[in-house]
Image (tube, rainbow, N blue to C red; front, side, top):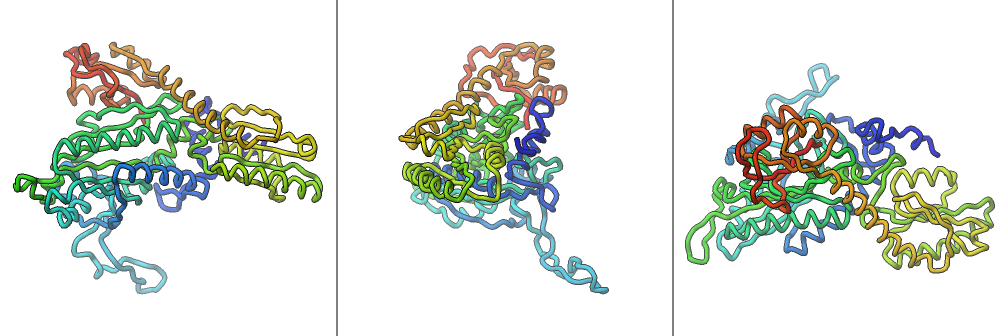
Length: 494
């Protein structure tokens, strides 16, 4: 086994350290020289690209079009929506000057005091303000609606505690921003996009999720409702993996986005916004991976199949290249992403360990004896099982196997999630059990005071009011003893 795997901390020893090491050792990302920011390396970015391309197509199938808005936002824009500015003020990075100059000694660069901006600019933490300021120019009549836009970009939120992919000061994401003529249309769109996220998480990332609505305390700043998908990591903690917000007319009114409706009356546009980020990379790692490295679902893996020849002589390599080249071409014709690694600069054992660490779903290996016998060795990453099979028809076998692996990875995660959702009505019991992880369905009286007490005493938060849990007769709040308004999902989280 390669040194990289020998040095990888076991999940059972230190789950957080295992995660941090795996991100780096699997060549996904590394810390940058800028505090709180990261360098996403080629393999990590290839996974993000797969996410981006898939989601982009799913968005477009609902009528969404891509746009791009500036990175910098006038500070005055943020003050126009009170809740919004309150929610993001502590995380904003501010641009105050537009020029540098050399100091008098000529040995350093300093800010030019004469180049101060008339109005300071915010590096976007999110783009509702600048987008709705622009929408005012685009929307005049109900015929201009709905306006369905999305942008792929980076944002900056000045985080004090950072972890690669999960929480960084700068991260990549998409942010959708839609405008509608009626409340009903906007609410329907917000729920529709949450369904898109849930579908993507389950069909492509193989991550089962719980859908629900956030409490008022946990809402996006400026939203009337925030809908969420919550995923469970292997340590039992929750990760908010995507959110969709019904913004009401808050931004329409703040930026005076009015339109003439079908009755020839002026009204303010109704809004949604929704987004997922490179945090999904963290979810992908923590839900599926093991002590040997990444485990990638085939639907998302940049390399679905790697093929490695085993040889001693140039003649053997030439013969293997011909046969394995045919198999590679046939797999590609089936739409499978293949890498044929016949590079001479690394030993086969290193290659095996490296591709295992990087989570490639299927590995095929052929040597001279295999070539003679028309056999090939196959290993599947999800179970680490190996088998030697007939090379004739291997392409169809692999295509079916990839779907089997995708299903198996999802089923394993779903079984874990379902077995770690607990009903709990007793606060003392909850305080003890939540330390070991899990999602807890508990009665809640709906007050911010009770919510704050739970967070302060247990470090757990109300993740959502889940859609698939009956809210009939929710019982008695386990903290206050008052009649409960909802059954909510509570967990510790990242």
